[in-house]
Length: 173
Image: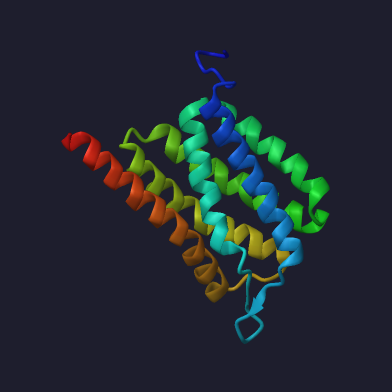
């Protein structure tokens, strides 16, 4: 137990492992799944469809382990460097680090209900992640950022909707 947070509880281990695993998986997928040419030289990586889930997994992990989620992010960054193409891992980890920091700040300092924090933190963090990643990969364009951000928000919106409905049912009971 550290600062009142038991990081070895089953829920803490589950959400932390899921968060770390998703980051490493996505970074590896960026090395094996080629981006799609959207025309005019604009690229969209289809892996972006699952990136939004990382932001949600981070919110759930932080809910259980608090600020130790930053250690989980560091572990994922180190593993990604060794398990994915180093250039892709570097761009991805830089994008994750910057956008996840924004996500962490929104999640940590807004005192909104959990479902709202999930949505607000994703709305802020996903475009930052898209801009940084696409820029570092040499694929930065407005349509590319919009497509990548929209694909990330799909997962975030689905989870937000499910969590919000679950919270409404629980409060009505």
